[in-house]
Image 1: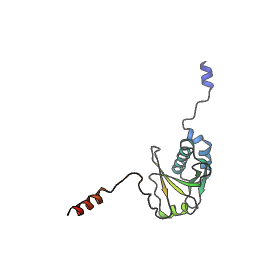
Image 2: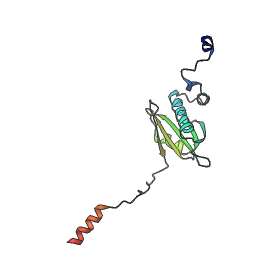
Image 3: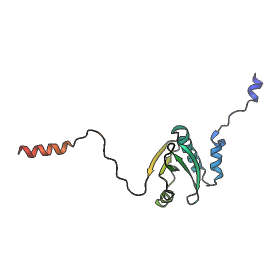
Image 4: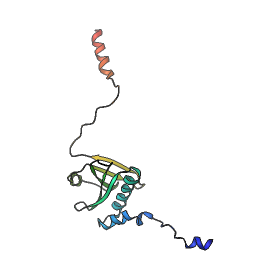
Length: 150
C-alpha cells in the first residue's frame, strides 16, 4: 500500500503556475509577473464564480498588460477588463487607451490577499439613476406646512 501511495504523483505546490490559461498569459510576454498573476485571478473569478462567457486574454501592446475580454452572459456585449495589482498606478492616458478599444471597460483592482474590486469605467460622466422606492422629501413638506400656518 505504501508503495502505491509513493508512486502517485503529488500535486504541485502552486497549481496556478501550471494552469493552461496562466501559461497562455505568460506567453503574451507583457513582462510584469504581478500583473499576469492579477489577470489570472480575475480570469478565474469571471469564469468560475461569475460564470461569464467567452473569457479570453489579449495583450495590450501600448500598456504591456494582459487584458481580458468577456461577455457577462450569452448575447451580451463584450467587456474589456483591466486587471491591475492594487499598488500599481494608472494614468488617464492608459484608461483612454483601453476605452478606445470600443468595449465597455471594467477596472479590477487586485489586492495582495486576492480580494478583487471591480469598477465600471466610462467615457465621460454618467448621471446616476434616481433612487427607487417610496421616498418623500420631509424637509420640503415641513417647510410648506410652516408657510401655511403663518
